[in-house]
Length: 306
Ligand SMILES: Nc1ncnc2c1ncn2[C@@H]1O[C@H](COP(=O)(O)OP(=O)(O)OP(=O)(O)O)[C@@H](O)[C@H]1O
Image (cartoon, rainbow, N blue to C red; front, side):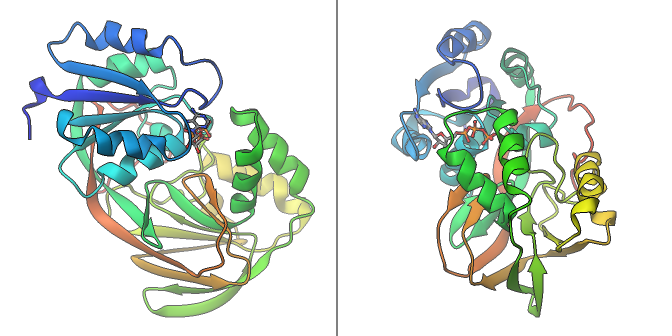
């Protein structure tokens, strides 16, 4: 691998992620990185799957592949980079920005860029679901339903998420699932079953507050059916990192998870997948080289093992 001072960076920018245009991003990136004696190029994605393609097509020319966008863009880039010697980095510019928030990165792209100049290497886990990688969360139930709604929406940013949740929450019916965690099987009726590598959905909604990004474990949060009157308490707990202490939440950790059920559309890092296959999940410990800023700000839920 190339010495750090000679890293060659490819910034992969999703022009439709989050709110606000991205036209000025290449110039901003070149302003910050152009002053360093490193090779830097930028490119824009043109649609779903393009970020992975851009990594693959430029594999030999770069050492660091930087996702500039939200968790969907992150997922596409890490899917091509994890399990190899190449490096991943991130400039959060999406709607939920789960990984960026988990890592304590600035939500201001210009600032996150400056912080990236003085970054250091960490090695983190990724998850796999039916052969596909994820870095944040994968889930069935209401979150998958909302991911499907959001993917069809033209509006981006955090507010459309809230609008979809408020609109569909009352009518959503919990489903039965057969869940196997490291060979122990049980059945649960659940509103949400989330399997998490990091602690949040994005926007600081901590669905799995005990998750650590490098402990070689997946955290499983089962949110059981609850009376409508409890919803404000659960929402509060979701955002203050206390959901695991609710009696409606069942919390596990494991390495191999199987989820079976009749309604198995699921979400992977916020992207909806329509599929009726059982979900086979596993953790791939220390499988992603990631550059993170030198002084990570302390945020609730951010935790590295050890
Ligand atoms: N040029 C493009 N036009 C339309 N869609 C694109 C384009 N480039 C990438 N995409 C797709 O846009 C989708 C949304 O991207 P992303 O998830 O990064 O942003 P977001 O949804 O706003 O943020 P977050 O996932 O953090 O909530 C992804 O499915 C991605 O594949």
